[in-house]
Image 1: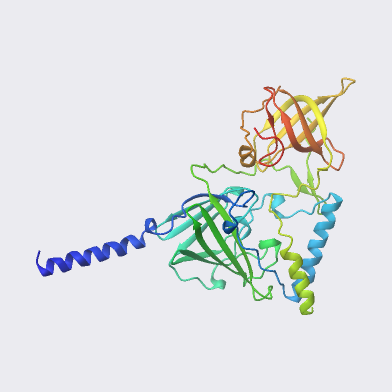
Image 2: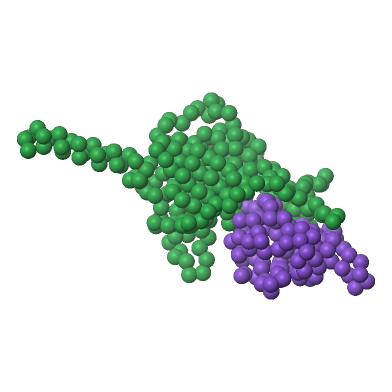
Length: 248
Length: 129
């Protein structure tokens, strides 16, 4: 083999390795279905998510939020729990969609995009890879906003903006149109995934709220459809959740 | 608001992480248990909840109708249910937590199927298969 041929072959090999590193297969395998992981008896504590940071609201919002939560607690004690949009089958949106009771989420990576589908309410979000984030004012506010992602080593970093103000945030917190959600998603083991979520909002929050969700891989699980066709709950004139009874 | 007030609020919020669900179950009196024996008039394998509609005769032969709420289909499947486990005409006995309003409705605790199997209302809620 001539020196030139050797050089070309070597160059090709280098390019091939680089190409593999750019394909989804060479990256941490996030694909598949993931169920919330809450540890439990005998679980390895190192796999549990770290505790959430305290939530500190700006004084303007803190009192209203505290009063709302106190009213919720009081109503629940009375047996007349206050309704939220979810009672009417309105989807959760970001970031609450990432953790709804025991429902799994499905992650579908492909070149240039990672799609997340939740089982509860069949919500869908799309993360556009290696693209600059759009200015907040340029995106119509919605339930899922606009998400861009990039890999930092073994961690998928996702930036989300433009969540509609009527979509309640983590812990049912209010938020402004300036809210920014940063997720750092990584495999802790082959089958345990952590999603560290940081919520920044210079209007509502005194400091960022940080919490981590943990998931376990669900091999062979088939996502169950969830169409809200038989919702018998409604919110009465006092704001309480009620259930409709069939006559027969 | 002072820094100490903020700190108190912060602690309060961090200490009460609420599990999200479609709705609160506080409208049901979960401290109470009512046992019903009757005939299924409908089994609706639907979301956000499945329902058992049940005709329950009293000692005098009068029939009262009950609507019984179950989890969503996904949560029920995680607890061992299938969509074929009940059908119209089945005779069953079930235990529920009644609505606090006094209406004839409630939240399923567990049901004994015609074939003798006992199912709860999802994983960690009542009987497991």
